Length: 109
Image (cartoon, rainbow, N blue to C red; front, side, top):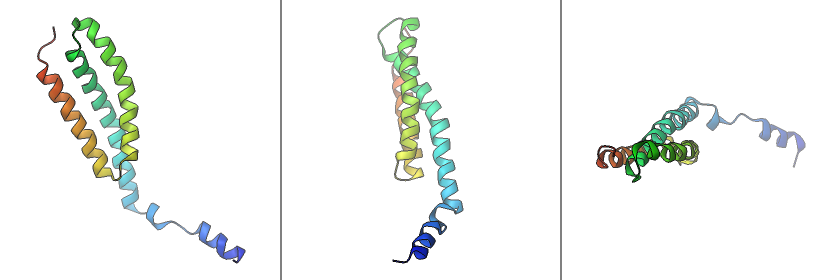
């Protein structure tokens, strides 16, 4: 194997990562991670505060603290998903489920 051809293959531009589709994919995943992470964490805190059988003031604290663990999980999911569409669908699905759980729990005690 020639040393120059090996260098040429390593330094050749990667067409898959330089196009607008790649940039749109990264932008969609970033939006899913930032906005989706915030929304899912907020809905998780909302649903947890409604579902924990404590007084309202006491139930908000554990829900909010656990939501801090949910937001990075959503960001990791956004970049681990097979495609940006699946990442967005997963974030929207989890947000819908959490909103439904919080809504079904009824008014706070």
